[in-house]
Image 1 (cartoon, rainbow, N blue to C red):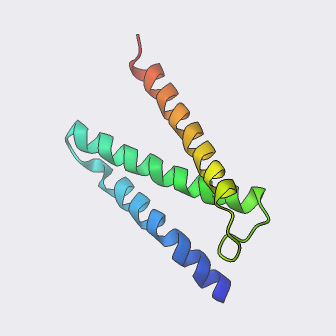
Image 2: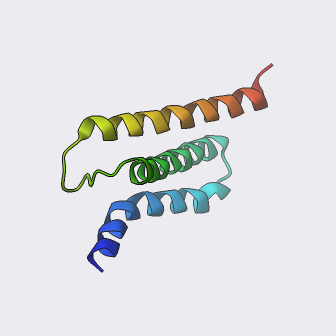
Amino acid sequence: MKSILNFLARHITWLIVGSAALLLFRAGLPEYKTMLLLVSVECLAIALSGIAAFVYTKIDFTVEMSGTNLGLLFLGVHFCIGMAVLGVYLAQFGM
């Protein structure tokens, strides 16, 4: 039970923010849609960072301090998400 509450406490923030951004995606102005898309993609990147930390490491980061490994995972996932967003943007709006 404690591990379930720990999991929910760590992931509830990006779940709520990402869900709210997707629900508010009906906004009319293109600027709002762009901001909501950025928030949604960032929540996806945070979720993928958590999945990568779970899958690729055996270190329990709540007990053992290993900021370098976690930072590199976070950086790598955000770099990949950024390149994917840039590629989609260039494919849609590039000349």
